[in-house]
Image (tube, rainbow, N blue to C red; front, side, top):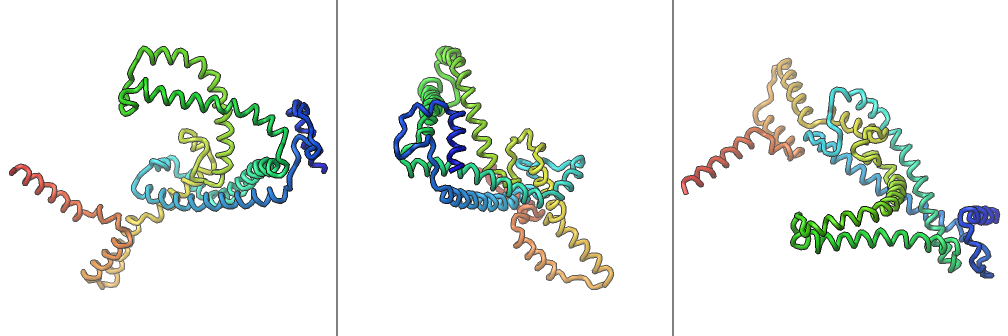
Length: 313
């Protein structure tokens, strides 16, 4: 009851015109609260499911990013540089602890957001009419429909008027009409840009709550991702793992260590054992088959033979 009084007082301050509605006897409040236990359990279940999915996706991305780092691919992880070695090792220090903290905070934020949405939906289902939400939706729906209409209108004009061959070719058609449309569209987009900026802020908040547990994803974007402490810990962990678990490095060091032992014991490994050891290693690491000198040499020979046959014809 005290929570209902508090909600009514807040609504009177935020939406004072909500009292203009005709009050019904079965809904004396502008926002009658439903059973909060049901909404809380639903929010906990949904948030837990999303967190588990995000962690599984992050584990998959860890494997993919480590393989990319093995190949020298820096499309998702910042490139390895001697100036960042200290940052890599300190990031590796924080990875496990940061992951727990980010998951905990993300779970709390996501539970809160989902619970607010669940309470609103449950209030509609339980009481049939919520005057505060009706007033809020009456104000928001026209504002949200206008950008949607503008976006679809721009797509229609761009496909059928301003691009050649119905958008299949990236060349402008009707350039004079295009320039006139840009001039007239400028003033309308100034107002539309304010609305989309607010929507961008709301989407960023919701996206940050959903992806808070993902250290492999930085909500700051690619240009500012190095300012994200969680992402710095993630790519520091990736580079440290790559430096100590690279399969080519481990194979080379194992070969050197085996040769050193053979020199000390004077018992050399037979050629058949070396072939079997190489076969097992290539089976466990099939991507290295295409990097062997013998395979590259055979590919070059096959290409040269094809060129010779082509020249004969």
